[in-house]
Image (cartoon, rainbow, N blue to C red; front, side):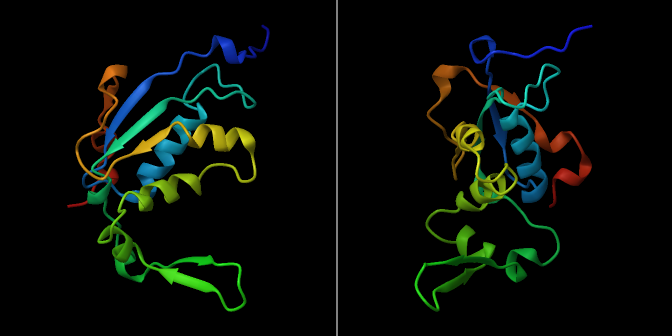
Amino acid sequence: MKTISVKPADVEKKWVVIDAEGAVVGRLAAYVATRLRGKHRPDYTPHVDMGDNIIIVNADKVVFTGKKRDDKRYYHHTGHPGGIKETSPAKILDGRFPERVVEKAVLRMLPKDSPLARQQYSNLRVYAGPDHKHEAQQPEVVDFKSMNSKNTRG
């Protein structure tokens, strides 16, 4: 039996919609990262972008387990001396761009320093509200919350 190596021209990408309302952030991000990379497919080829185009709606309604919404810290550095900055998921979710919590969680679950990972990440669209502008692609709805009882809280 020969090993299948899929060519980029042979890949058929699907469009998928996931409703993130009440979903646990880490579990959602792990599932989305797997779908973006294409590892859910039996013909997965590591050097080819085989993942689906994923649309996440209601990203502002994601939940954290435990007290992570308030206690977890995200750090970044401005590049200047003493320029370490920190924020919490609560500040981001209550702020102007709540979808960034989900975007960053997914980004951090993809491989680092890889042109392929950057390409795969560009196939993710995250919206804070219930509406998205990709109806023309006729996306398939994936019920992430019913896959496992641990995927939701509240």
